[in-house]
Image (cartoon, rainbow, N blue to C red; front, side, top):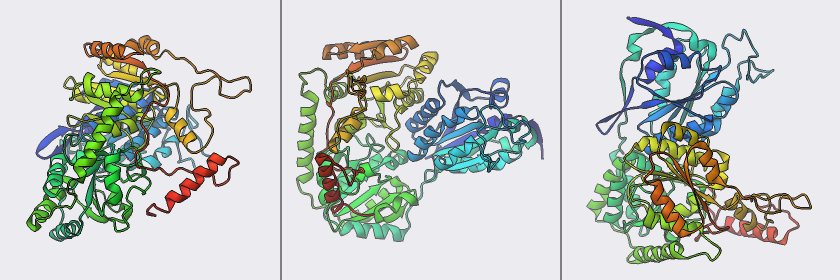
Length: 621
């Protein structure tokens, strides 16, 4: 066998450069490149390979390890999981900074390859700088923290281990049922050790994503289940988007009169003007979807994790005769809520079941009710979009102006945390596919800016990307603004400044607890954080990075800023000062939180009673 002598790091790079993914006859180069921050744990190993060897991978310098990994995730999500980046860091704190991002990728089922530097496999110089020592187990390093949040984890302690490890990593990361964060720890001595690697190991590998179909018997079971129902409802989850099944789900809904609600990951797969689209479902959903869900006798959950926000902590579905069908490539997700599982690709399964239902001449029994709830919800959104706040700019009013007048239908909006995801799932009207990019599996504060940066890289110059972020999320993590300046990536950040973590303040006060420590306030004379509000000039922060920036307090200023920003060739930040508590609120939904059983507060006691009453209506599993 012909071999090539090279270091483990050099072999790793050459392997990644040769990986491709084929889906529906189209071939994609799977790894566009590597985001990285160099340190003593990777700069002389993998760093040498990146700098000194020939390859076709783009290297992008990060400014914070978590943020650069979020950028990689944004890139992969916008590419519908068919292309991604690897991310590399030094040992210890650099690696640990990526753990949150790994959790974000795994929860959202987004493929990202994590390559944290690790301490010495030989242990000769231990303890090295930034090494976490465990007196009870010298095999444990900081990188073991990734085990809990990775779908595949390994550590390369000998250079020849790389071959089987990478093949298994690709097996997992390209599997739509398993994908998420894949982590391979790279001890810094092993990175530099050499091996005679077979040249066959570096051949072009094409990983095929074949669409899994239902058996004939499974199709018959699904058709029989649906045929028994009179008021079925579908959920359009992220799996519909990643399967490219939007057209099939829309046709399914129209053919059989079955309305559907959207999850955060599924929103934007089918446009709002579809007459069977009820919009957001659950805690951050709208009244249309939640009213129909309440009485549905069959739930067809397509490509969804069935998280508690989607199910309203399992209170959304009140019909005691409700049955659940789970259509998913993942058995883990298909079985949730005691569903009848149908393990298959969403697009293929919908096509198969559709043929069976057509043969039976099936149609639901909704009559005119779906049209009426959609019309009522549209009227409510119109009201929210046009109602002025006498105190200033309201958050929902700004969203309406962006959605209806200022942004192009083809633009992509990115968000993740705070009150904006709830507002956007309820009221944002998607008018082009893949224009709604929400990280809400983890709702990770700080994803908004870095994820939008990665999303803009993914779209290139074909689409304009807007990061919609609250001041809380912005303060948490905005380091990749400097990367956007460095790379001249023209992402636009629209920052909604309401002076704190207002959505959590709402959660606190809605459970009868006094408002405390969720707003930006100084200490008062009693030593409590109840003094004057802080005033922050976020535009000046962005200007310091080198961005074009604006401060907005009026609707005219908003229009002028967005229009000017669109002409810029680099990144822009628009600091919008919005009024407190000007977000949307719940519509026919409930969310379970741990209200104290014992409290001296009468309002907390009332909130606990409400919790117990809602639990009597909730499905238990």
